[in-house]
Image (cartoon, rainbow, N blue to C red; front, top):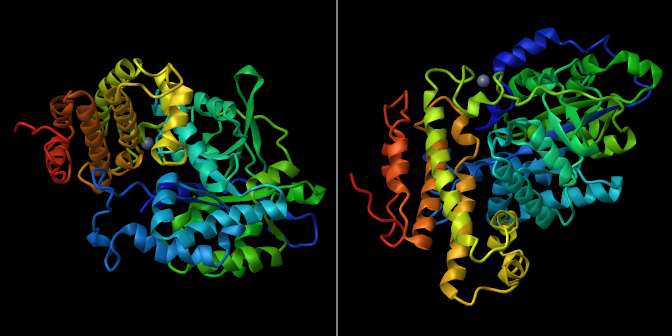
Length: 507
Ligand SMILES: [Zn+2]
């Protein structure tokens, strides 16, 4: 479903023709090893109805109940059972991890276990955290960036039992503030597309990005022709031995090879391609990492392992804001651009509706929780483990209440928690998936609107203030080029909820 999140086919074809980094094919495998890292970005957005937390039946996924189930059978389970996660580098998006933990705990445990195994063998983990809601961070306010990063780190800490050192950014979308916030939160590396560099780079080595206050962060640039090929060219991945023997050597930097200098080939793709987007590619992956690549002189490694052995020695300047699947900064997820076919003006309209709603939600949140909380925004950063039951509500009040204890008025306490939960769904309402594709009338924008409605409902329950009329009025401007439906029509088509949860919307 999100295969195309990687990079556009056109861009890949172009890069494949250029293939700017290869020298001559490798003929002697006995020299210094070339490292190979396969990064899988495993992610699904939340599919559940935010009022019931149930995932509705998705007919297109038949015979499975929904796409999460289908992809588990085709990809997550076979890759986990084959031990592929032990060798690759990966991030497991929090919303997917959360679903998998409940729906298929054995698969989930096997993936979490992979990071522990990797640490036991190599001294470092091979899992990266992910900014929580797969949100395009350059489009966020500073405090929202911080919350997304904090929630992603908190989720990672809970699942893997350690602090994250790497973080995957949705669509590899960056600006300098994002990177600085990552560094401030202890993140030492991330992955970007080569075209996000403003200067010439050699993707066979990581680079340092200088940040304010003497901070810095390491960035790995993935090998674009190989990452695109593995994603889109089925012939390339028919045979893992052939891939290791014929395709990989073309990307070795021979000058480094000759001088014994370390180099890494990083293939970063959506993880779901291994078995879901591309049938049987889970088996390709197993053979490649266990037999094919080592047999032809490549040492399979994780990013942090490589970085520990060979820290970056060069600096890079980045194009910002930028992302891996848009050539127009981050316009694809903002006002729209030619990266998606047809009229994409609905993106700007949907964004305006969501931003107006967030603006009002934020004002109400700040105003009403300031009565009880020392710093509402710092409290929001800490909220994820509370709502998920990983930390007690008492610990929350101790840290963030003005009086280091729960408010004596139960209604005030409840109102604070409802407004925090409204903030949670407000964050969910701007996930990048809603803006990725070409049309408004799809499941992804519907899910964004459904999450916004849940935030409206929680605000209503907390304060008796109804943000629906203005939001629906704003949504009226966003129109599907395919079906003519507006965002307002889609809002009205959402499942009915009880009167206590939302006031009736006048026609
Ligand atoms: Zn674009």
